Length: 174
Image (cartoon, rainbow, N blue to C red; front, side, top):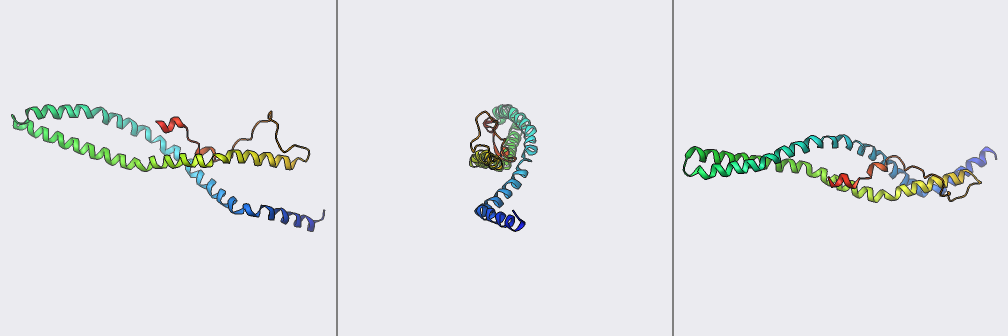
């Protein structure tokens, strides 16, 4: 085959795949986005100390309420106890406001987790499509091979980035 025929053949094949061009561009953008999503693991490591801090704060809540109640029992009879009770209430109110504020800071992360779970569900077919196109590519590249791979052949690993969105149910339950 001469060079002119090879160019015409390449153009014909390119025309066949032309309808996939927008999808290819979208997928390239998605893969680029997934690279940044992969950095979430670094942010997730920060949750360990936050969880430990939450446990410390939670361990203080009951003793704080008990102390406030004890001061409350003597507040009417003894002026300094009323002052202490009022201070304890102020401390409790401040603690509650700070905890509420921190929960609001974490809310977008919780929403992101839900969006990532949804993205993982939506992208689930990508694994099968990757395997099917890989097998098809092998079949086209090797004229003597069959289109359907035998079951004894190992499956092709999923494309990089697809695994990034798989969210372990145990992790989301934590």
